[in-house]
Length: 602
Image 1 (tube, rainbow, N blue to C red):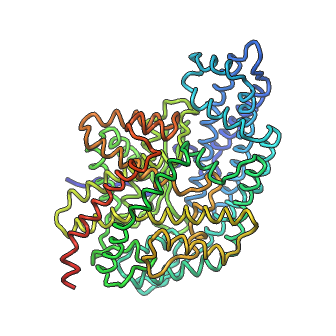
Image 2 (image 1 turned 30 degrees about the vertical axis):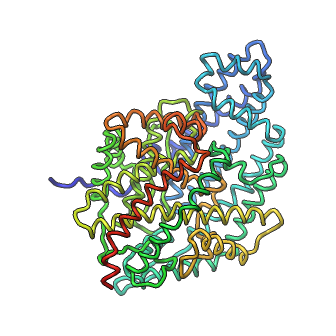
């Protein structure tokens, strides 16, 4: 049977024709501005203690539902434009417009939240019992509670407005600098210019000299720009800390924990369990070093394949494998992924000029998604593709839910994506035709555990310590390098021969304005998805509907409530996290067993 072929470039014209010069987009923005003006008017007129307050609030929420979809639609399109071509100046201008409109929308929300906070508890309970508000009870109560912990309306609006050319601008400067970085390498005897995204893909090459050369040149590039990146990181953190100080928030973790709807007790239980169980993963790093003929792995060896051959997987082969494995667990998820491939919802072409990394963004008004990545044929590329399709499916099953209830947190968003990734990885191991293939696939699977338990832990340790020092003043580039190296040594059990001091500069997540501590939710999602995966294996044919029900609840529950309802577990106890880690340890045990003879033969 002939394998189906798919385009590697996405179609944006089906959303707004014309790219960054789209007349359709500008018409849509104008319509949004009209609706936003009406929302501002209705919010100003809404009086919580008025005679028709329930009717007025219902009208505000209906308009809010519409504008939420529109502002996300605009933001998603602009993100796609700036990612596909970092030199698109027209798109950058649209990015500024998006930030301006987003701040204006946030200011209306802040005003509404403050008005909700003035409603007395008795009246509030009565409102939530009415059919018009019952479905939004969780998210409205959450917003009302958070509003009570913020500054006055005027001050919060001022913060949002100043953030456009302050806070948000620092993130944009970072993206601009990264977009200009180019790495020159020699391939097939010819010099070739690579974007940082393309260069990063070379870190999984089997030839160590290539990895070492690319890592060295990347390190030089990040070091050359480190003064500028030090400015962006310090000012982003400084803006946050000043905001927190005026609100009376003591811990820099307060905002990310609230954004992820989880408690610090849960976060501590997760990291505590991981810290206690790192020994097997240190053993994996030691065995991998032996298999590569090294005394210890260096940073640029972490993504190296252990197979001698450069096992390349074409885009069409990767797509076919993902679709086959999705269908074993959820025909609906497989059908959705098939639609995404056929409709050109995925930008995967390996070319210069693209933003590094990968993402999935949703167009709730069009009920579409778009996936961005650079596909170069590695096993990790297949995993990334499955990961982003998991994100896309999550949004797909929520398209008919109220906009306010679609705003799920990052940690549970990462649950859907890592679950999809796990389906593919586990199936590949189980279907391996030989021990050699199984070893390679297990190694690729365990690398993800190492990433979540060690790489992400290093990011968390670095960011936690950086914020504490930033409270005392600007942190120098030299000190940032020290903090990063120390965090990596601790997270990896001091098991590497060399580390990556400028990782704070090269990692986009530290410079994203929308989400502080853009790290621990990944590890949460990975381990939480293991719990879901175990349940899927136990439940047989009943899994699909229960999984969709869990995803649909992600925007209207805390993480702890979600786990209790759908998995019957307590996330504040280390026992849950240890049981999930144990599944990863089984992979390590199998890997060590299969490779024992290879080491003995050396």
